[in-house]
Image 1 (spheres, rainbow, N blue to C red):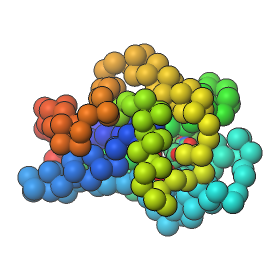
Image 2: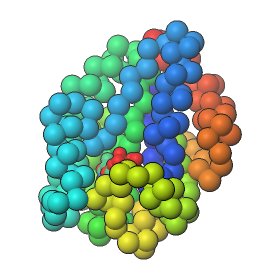
Image 3: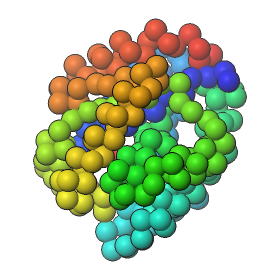
Length: 210
Ligand code: TYD
């Protein structure tokens, strides 16, 4: 596969979305044309699914929640990510399949092997080249999030233990695939974290053509 596929993972309030935007700005300043997207969402169909998923008034059962995440993912991969990577672009995706393992697997208790199969089906086997984990204590992340008015979604409102299980799962995934994952300390300030993201990514840029 040409292109370079980078995913951003982490708990609530880890600051990863800010880092996606900063990295994209740096790449544009270098004359590159990164594709920036997010999950759930990133296409008209998937943004509709996102609205349904994050609405605090809705209560999908865990399996329905997981399948909606996969439906959003299938649409994004087939219509956006795969074509952009085939064109040699660098793709920055705010969350991807690992979020399902962490949130619906460790968080909700759905069997991880089943979710991994669904991930393979939805992504048609498209795996990131690099995954950045923005690791932060859930208590700090949730505090940051609740300080930003109007920013909490349905999953933010889960209890602290849920977010602790999510974090532990991410760290375990990172340990099990050290070639793909890089763990960053998301308690650092935004500028310092940006510098670390750049240090991690810049040596790999030669893979992306545009
Ligand atoms: P968002 O507001 O984008 O949160 P964040 O800034 O933390 O990324 O909402 C995405 C939410 O969806 C987030 O709480 C994590 C959750 N999610 C899952 O539970 N499973 C998934 O597979 C994905 C992609 C996201």
